[in-house]
Amino acid sequence: MTQQGRRHPEYQYLDLLADILERGDKRGDRTGVGTLALFGTTMRFDLSDGTVPILTTKRVFWKTAVKEMLWFLTGQTNLRSLLLENVRIWTDWPLDKYRRATGEDISQDAFEKRILDDEDFARQWGELGPIYGKQWRRWLGADGREYDQIAEVVRQLRETPTSRRILFHAWNVPDLAAMALPPCHMVYQYNVTSDGRLNCMMMQRSVDSCAGLPFNVVGTAALQFMLAQQAGLTPGELIWAGGDTHIYLNHVEQAREQISRTPRPFPTMRLARRPDSIDDYRIEDFIVENYDPHPAIALPIAV
Picture 1: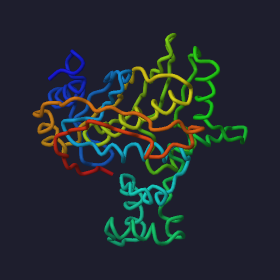
Picture 2: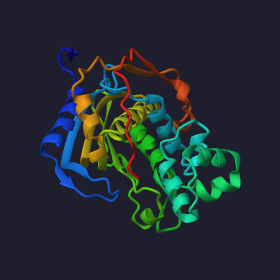
Picture 3: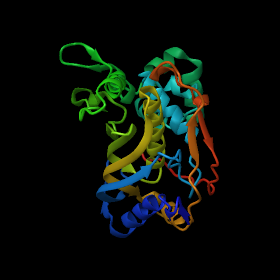
């Protein structure tokens, strides 16, 4: 199937999965599950016509991905604020920490309920450490000052759009040990073309290709739409670059199933309003139309 008169761009992702399955280095990993991995991979998606790379060969819960991005933009780092939005994708790490520390074999549902019902419990066991939001909005410098990298990106896009220094990142070396999970999607760099298109290149050091990557691309696209709107630009190209790009060994059959499916046309995304600042977007502002995916594929998460 083609989209916009060319090979469907989702084949970049399906080809990536196939390439990992065929050529991936079989390796042990931190989780103990094991992976097939390639190093140094790329994909490119054109957002200029409003289409967004929300995969169609399986259902991607795009609202969850956008809610996660909006949560990062708040600078918050406690699981409770995310669970209040019914987003459960970060629970595994504090839940694992709680089980190891207490020996209590609590279920995920019961743990999340305690986080929601008991603010003291949430403060103790729901904290994820200085992860993305902290680094993006409140990076603590050696001078003792906090730096808002996102606000600076917006300022640069408006005032110095030809700069080659419009970027932000989350790999704050002194804070890594205190994070529930060191940042996977590490660096976002932006480029403004002479005709007013905003391009983004996102570099991801570690890529769970089946579970994480589809969400990461959606979140990156949503942020690109927000930044473009705030700066009076139009979305251009999204370039994704992966470091250790892997398929967990317990995802191999699911990857093969997805590769066997034929992509359908990508949906479109638009913003329903223009908020006063990057801090004022809500999930209701994101309108996705004509999304007709194949069924979801269940995947276990390696912690």
